[in-house]
Image: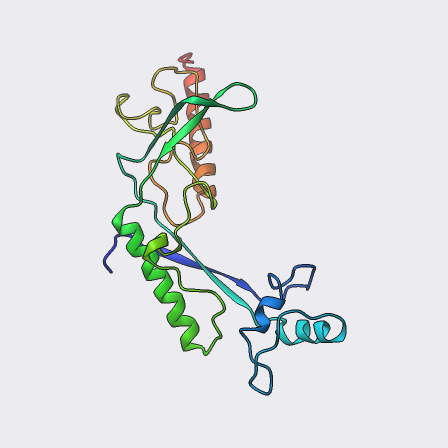
Amino acid sequence: LDFPRGYHIEYGGGMNMPSYGYLNDLPRFNGALANVNGAGKKSGGYGRSLKEEYRDYFGTKVVLAGRGLAIARKDNYCEIDPNTVDKYGIPVLKFHYKWHDAEIKQGKHMQDTFHDLFTGMGAVITSAYVGADKHYGLKKPGEIIHEVGTVRMGDDPKTSALNKWCQAHDCKNLFVVDGAPFVQQGDKNPTWTILALSMRTSEYILEQRKRRNL
């Protein structure tokens, strides 16, 4: 591979109970999928034909999505926005973020892998290949899930806000035990790590409290 670390693939579809909006707008599949005569059906449908389509397509859709490593970079950071406040008058965060070449290569590998998987299984691909002009489908920070960082931990107060116990360098009674202390995010759900860090920090707080250091 021409990029570090890795990513994992999440899939969706299956035999879920049909509901309103099921299959993400069924009519758009009509033009992509051929009927028994090999011809595509016009977009639309209602009544008996619509029910038949739901029966025909039920359980046939598969969606693949990639979850990859976000690389920590010095150029990626947040700061207090000097010009923008929220509805309460509190200044909001301003983010600076640029994709690393390795992340873009990772996105390309995802797209190519998905295409190979679907082609190999003889699937009808209904979505377009996302190319380099759109970073191979990479989502902007904040547009997906499991966002972490902004209050990084570290040994040096000049380059980090918290120490290894998730305790603020400048305020010993302040602890941050959510996803903010993370310096970098892997491709997995960070929830268990957040729980582990919070338990570790809680034990440290109790220990320091007994010693009257807090």
